[in-house]
Image (cartoon, rainbow over all chains, first blue to last red; front, side, top):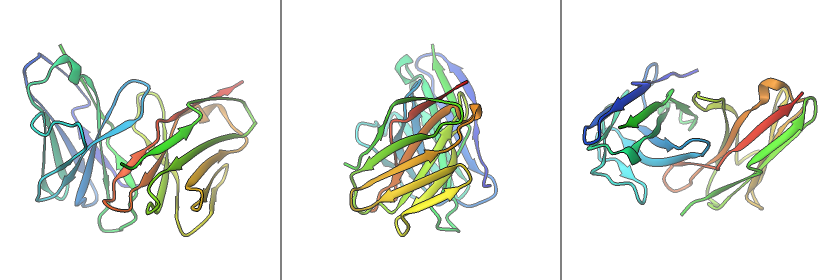
Length: 117
Length: 112
């Protein structure tokens, strides 16, 4: 099946620093990618929809200045957590669908565990 | 906004028995309903999906049913095995903006 690569898998940072997470579709093009946040033993909460070549669409309650999303190409979206604080510690996971098939099947990255000290 | 409700949150079944997880959705324009299995520490994996033009779909021990009138869909796992233990998420694709909205998940335990 389609492969979505997410990097890094785990990052530990000091409070106040910024962290960039990459999401790549390896063998297909994705006009749209999604970023989720998952707390332990909880569901995936959609944070934003990343649109290639345009601004991301953020869900209600998600700070766009805090979570910067860039979708510069059809295979890469990045999420930058700016001025991270301990409450931003979480599991961030991206997903993408193969635009070419129009099947809407979402493939997930392996996730990034962010720990802010 | 769009919402997906999932029940139960935890389910324990004896190995070999069947497990059923139920979901309801709010957006009547939703037309695609995937189910994901997430093992501890791993990414969600698509296990089965159904589109609104069919009422049932089966893949070996897994089946999904959809009732569009009632806006609910269910996952059925028969002859459960230890490796079926995981968290299962239902989801619905919104009709307006193609977002996937997830249910809260069901932690399935298969008892020996």
